[in-house]
Amino acid sequence: MTKQQANWSPYDNNGGTCVAIAGADYCVIAADTRMSSGYNILTRDYSKIIQLADKSVMASSGFQADVRALQKVLASRHLLYQHQHNKQMSCPAMAQLLSNTLYYKRFFPYYAFNVLGGLDNEGKGCVFTYDAVGSYERVGYSSQGSGSTLITPFLDNQLKSPSPLLLPAKDAVTPLSEAEAIDLVKTCFASATERDIYTGDKLEIIVLNASGIRQEYMELRKD
Amino acid sequence: MKIDFNQLETPAPLCGTKEHDEISKHPSFELPVARDFDGFQKDAVQMVKPAKGTTTLAFIFKEGVMVAADSRASMGGYISSQSVKKIIEINPYMLGTMAGGAADCQFWHRNLGVKCRLHELANKRRISVTGASKLLANILYSYRGMGLSVGTMIAGWDEKGPGLYYVDSEGGRLKGTRFSVGSGSPYAYGVLDSG
Image 1 (cartoon, rainbow over the protein chains, first blue to last red):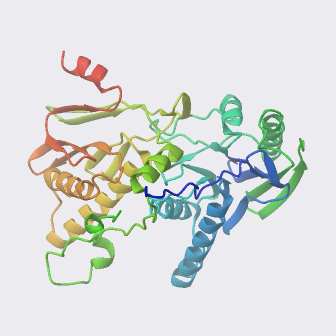
Image 2 (cartoon, rainbow over the protein chains, first blue to last red):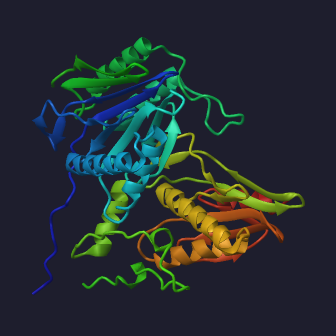
Image 3 (tube, each protein chain N blue to C red):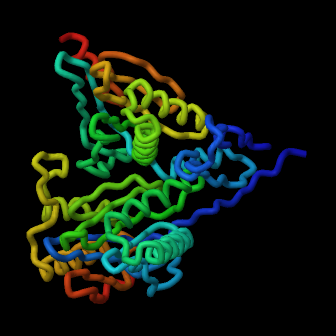
């Protein structure tokens, strides 16, 4: 009798797109709320964004079960950190923690494509972008998920920032105002929804700035 | 199929004390329990789609070591990033280059930096480039066959002057004065070798 092979995959792709933009004193993180599987929509109202700390917000697309597990791991590690250090984790610290958490599953990866947004220790906006196994870099803006190939070229055109490899180090944050950045994000998603079947339904926008955190919604096409 | 976990066991500590076990032992990785482990890894790698398309080079010259790298990361035909830092600072006097899997290079270079610092604290002097490259090569050798993809050059300045080593995830380690790594390396060698 020939050996039986498993014929199912532990992964699934629930689609969706995430975007984050860093400003001089704010950070905008946005994601659509559609969750799909193949050609079906599982729900039109699923949040892909989570606030991990005072000044860190993560948006993830990919396989939402892995995303949920990753969120729980990070939340519990943050709680431990708070107990040990009596303070909230900074965004750069959370970025390194997320990278290590992803790499520790190097041989059975989290199918999660993340962007982490927040304010750094100086109050400036910061965005970190990741691949599925934890390689990361700090950037001025980023997009991940099924609509990222449609959104990123547009953001490159509108927000092209000096390369972080230049010396002396130049600011990667956009000179746009908060309202302009939010408008830009809405435009991105409206366009991506037109051409990507996995993006749509509703857009959830989180804005982090010195006065705290704010949430906004916008309707997107449902087809 | 029984998976051989020996490679993942932590090597026996050289000294008897167990205080620094936490940091100095290998991180532990959980493995999927799959009938076809290799096939699963192959699929997982396809899913993760490591960024490809790199040229890095380094050479020793009279005043030290020169290290250069491009900053593009591509996934198939799509450019996923134009600003990847492929030169990683292990510590203020040692650099590593990134070619192959970005996450693999970033993680293990950072781990190497930790080990170099522990060496400094334990021995009251900086680690040599020879020693650092050997540490990394031994770690990568112990994960040989697991699908890590690392093609790196360790360049630095120690008591013996400038040092340059090539280390890869097959377990290879070469000392040299001139190296280039990545898909663009043949072209870089063409220039390096004719000057």
